[in-house]
Image 1 (cartoon, rainbow, N blue to C red):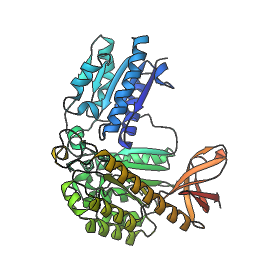
Image 2: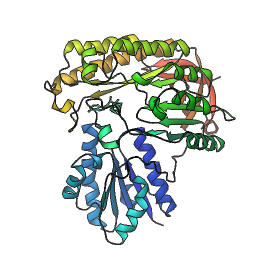
Image 3: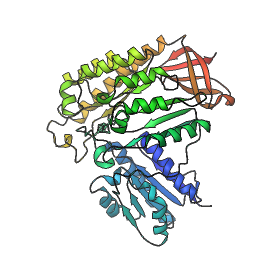
Image 4: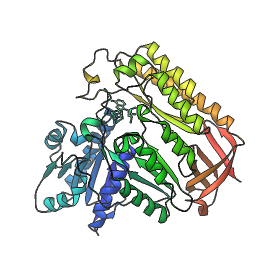
Length: 430
Ligand code: 5AD
Ligand code: SF4
């Protein structure tokens, strides 16, 4: 039986797109291999949002080249955001002539046809397709109680540092009823947690109140399950969404609300379209509807011209919000973006120093918060059990570990926090 292996880089969007690629391969009779070494088809589903992700792809291509030298019959394909970057597909073709298929995010659904063409001796390079269309393909989901569902694609925001609008194109929303049908089928087949995906879920269907309506429609099915969503752009997060979240236990008490920076001057240069005060006001509204909401964020360090004073505004904001979780990134230049052409690029030593300080600050805040949760009870979805320890998440996205046997896997369980150690919550089944 022929086997495939998919190397996935980057965000949840890519993880789910790999499930779609796997679905197409599965439909054609392929089974999953354990590694690149024993696969007949090797795919690299890439990301180019930051330089680090791109460097990893280029490094791994070196390893795959060696496999191809040993087994020339292996089919190698590269897809995702990276080939969509202007000039990148041609660079890959020149630098890595052993790649059989180069394709982008818009034509992933055509993988089957590309495999046929390779078998006929062709090399395939196809990037942009009909941008406006949303094509469906079979999905081979990862094992477990969690499933991803795309509700929209692309982004219209053009934050000045970000390459996503250039490589993933304009915002396109999936049909409302199609999403409802997909989520209902997932719930009926036993999935307990479903995450709705989009670069900017709050502008689903053209903007408020469509996303709030969608959330409410997804709470109508029988049984215990949770709906999560990401990512929310603060400028588009409206009160009706907080209201919808508060209206049903089936919508998780969790929001990923990337702020990116605490300085209003930097936020303006980033083209984020909100001030730190406006951002904090959104947090206040969300907390007024859902007092125990978990909020996480992305913060970027070293955006062009960022001074120590600007950086300290990010620290202040982090201290004020007290995030559940914070994802920190060093700004990296992306060619074609507005910020790439800005003067005042910050040197790497300063960026490294600031990000280390921010990570330390968040760790201290996380530790304090974790200690305050001791004694609290949470309903946890147990994702995995390893060596007698269950790992799960609460509705407000707190990660909790607890003694458990295999039978708890994939189930909702009530857990009481008994200890907080180095930012980690340890509980017991109650
Ligand atoms: N450099 C560093 N981080 C970036 N992000 C997006 N573009 C860049 C860039 N050029 C970060 C943002 C975004 C997250 C997904 O990646 O913080 O929210
Ligand atoms: Fe990039 Fe901004 Fe769109 Fe997010 S909202 S994908 S950061 S352009």
